[in-house]
Amino acid sequence: MQTRSATLHLLPAELQDIGYDFEQFSPCVLRWSDNLVIGGRRIAYRVDLDGEAPPEGAVVQLSSSDPSLISAPESVAIEGRGRYAVFQVVSTPVSITSSVPLQASYRERTIERPLTLVRPPVQYTIQEIRPEGATYVTPVGMNESGQVLIEGENNQYYLWQNGVYTRQHFPAPDGLRARIVDFNDRGQFVGVLREIIHDRGFAVWEDGVRHD
Image 1: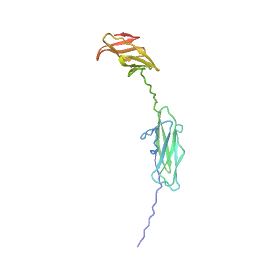
Image 2: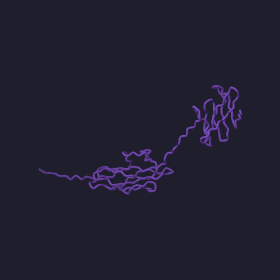
Image 3: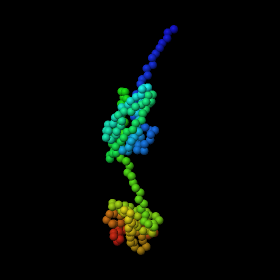
């Protein structure tokens, strides 16, 4: 009886991927699929092997194509028998969208992934515009000078700018009332002359004077 023997050779694990650490969600990440993040933040990244690291561990070399925009550590260590490691990259605020490739190298393989930095979203403040005593107001529009025209109860109009309200008067023929629809920086207001629910004509007001 013959006995045969064979030797099983296990190939060492290779580098599989580099990308976001999904388990450490960051609010600065806008879209995972596009590697799109807000500049000026720290981002949790990770490198993955396609198998277990050797008992003594593995060291993955890291690099950024533009360290002035994306700063990454020179390397990251994966513990023995581990499959991945997490590291932090630091980004710089940007005024325009910028793409910076990150590279990870282990053994004979190098993987590159782009990281796209964008400006932070614009922060807006809310300013309530309503004259004292008014129950409700309806915005008409805003001109190039930042003046806002609003309509209140009883066909009353106010021009608002920097917290100051100025009452506006738009005289109309007997039996009609003015409904302003637009205005400009030159103090001209355009609107319709309305009888109950029917429009009877158009007019332009300037300095309180109606021009039919």
